[in-house]
Amino acid sequence: MSLVKKFATVGGATLGSRVFGFVRETFMAAALGTGPVADAFNTAFRLPNTFRRLFAEGAFNAAFVPLFAKEIEARGMDGARRFSEEVFGVLFTVLLFLTIAMELAMPFIVRELIAPGFADDPAKFASTVTFATIMFPYLACMSLAAMMAGMLNSLHRYFAAAIAPVFLNVILIGVLAYAWYSGQDAIAVGYGLSWGVMAAGLVQLAIVWIAVRNAGIKIGFRRPRLTANVRRLLVLALPAAITGGITQINLLINTNIASAKEGAVSSLVYADRIYQLPLGVVGIAVATVLLPELARALRAGNLNEASNLQNRSVEFTLFLTLPAAAALLVMSEPIVRLLFERGKFSPEATVVVGHILAIYGLGLPAFVLIKAFIPGFFAREDTRTPMIFAAISVAVNVSLALTLFPSLAASGIATAEVVAGWVNALLLFATLAWRGHWGRDIPLLTRIPRLVIAAAIMAAALHYAIQWLAFPLSSAAPVLTQAATVCGLVAVAMIIYFAAAFGLGGASLGMIRRSLKRNAAPAAAPAAGEGTDVP
Image (cartoon, rainbow, N blue to C red):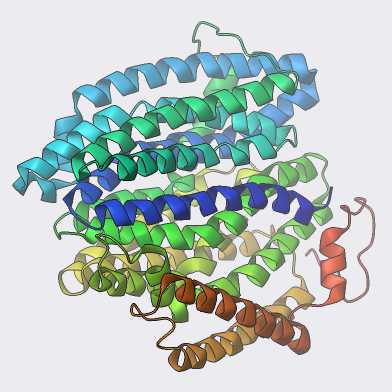
């Protein structure tokens, strides 16, 4: 299967999850708006979600996948199963004690670490503590699920792990639909959503557990022991957890800062949901597929193929991400109005969230490129260097957020996230190039500025079209009119971008064919003018 087809498998499943996520956020915006219950739920949900991405997804996709792949190669499926059982025993025990400790300390954690700004509002504070207590076991379910997803990815079975998150959104949509049908008040909706998150964790764990069994691996429980393999995993996982969860670290810190202003937390969450669509479909797909593919090429000593995989991933990433970033920059407000402006979500909230989303658009290429660069370190079992860069990025984010928040509110926090993202991306790329781990690809380097120009042409056309179509995109227009206009603008923008990209030479049929065909043999020489020059 070609690299792009693998990206499409993961990206397609992620797209389904993101589409359901849009529906969920639309219902939630109508039911809760940016009010106190919305702030309380979003803040409470961020706690287990952050831990999940720090200590589960990031750590296991970075550390577990290469070690599990080595076990398959050295000792076959039986050796890989024993290694998985050793890890499962330790992970389950740690998660059990962590969950108990966090549940008992939840009031302190919310008051001192997550949302100190809520302490002045007893009702909001109490709701946040209760919602977080209900939802926190979701972390244990998703951490175990992340381990099994890593196993599936190592076995080149990507779909089950990618489709499982859809069920979180499906369940929460069901909760919101029932709440609307039965006329529940805001606090009842918050309780229903919290229990829905807990149920979704169990469902997602069941899906990947069944998929692992179908792949031929039956995991039994072993007494937790720090074997040599488990110790190696922990050594790699700790810095990888920090690195893989850099965005979540920034979001957690930013939630702490934003809790000082009413509605700021929810405004950031709504904008984040929209920009997560291209980030998830492109960035997560690239990171999920690239790590095991790159680890395989490096284990085989095939530096040429490894370099080609990295370059093709960046090529694919920028080709799809640059137009998405340009569109978010110039038409963020019509998108937010169409998706969220109804019920308790006011026109004033549309302006605030739209401004934040436009800022996120400027950072989208950086956030996606980070996911394409990090596998170049993790596949070589170097998790320390990205951790250092992650720490630098966090320092940049915190200092800027604290500086800008008093004057720009939530927009200042979004600006800090974007600047920190670009700093991280540039440090990762510069280090890969300096170490000789990034092969020069002259055609790729000449295509990037042409893709930027194509995206700029598209953005200029969208800007003038939005001015001309001011009424069909306004709050006064019916929702169906707004939807038809936005969809029409997206379709025209795609035509303009692809025409400009191919016309300027930023993309070519040769590039498409090279990306779609099966991976070349290790010794195959690249075609003249289209290859990868490895120093």
